[in-house]
Amino acid sequence: MLGYLVTTANCREAARKKISRQRVKEVDDAISTYLGREKRCPATLDELVAGNYVPSHSLEDSWGTRLTYSCSTDDWQVRSAGRDHIFDTIDDITSDPIVRENR
Image (cartoon, rainbow, N blue to C red; front, side):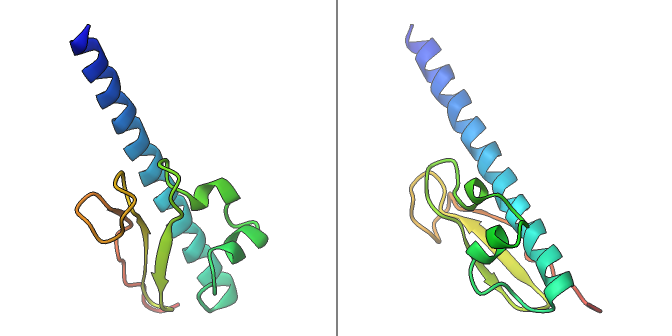
């Protein structure tokens, strides 16, 4: 029975990580599209929702913490705090900081 509970907890945690990675990527892609159209970074992630670039539920990771981002017109990064709900720790999930040139 204990093995079943551990396996179930591990599967649930893996699913949360996968969902959070998908949300980080979705917001990352939305920022890319926003930059391409608006030629500036969104002032807040809520601008992405208001402009229909991303649904509002995508702004939270699967642990219920709101995503954060940093942005300039040539690079940006989206971050989930991860399971511990604390940013800048080892369990954070981040988008790849890709430098985009010739926008």
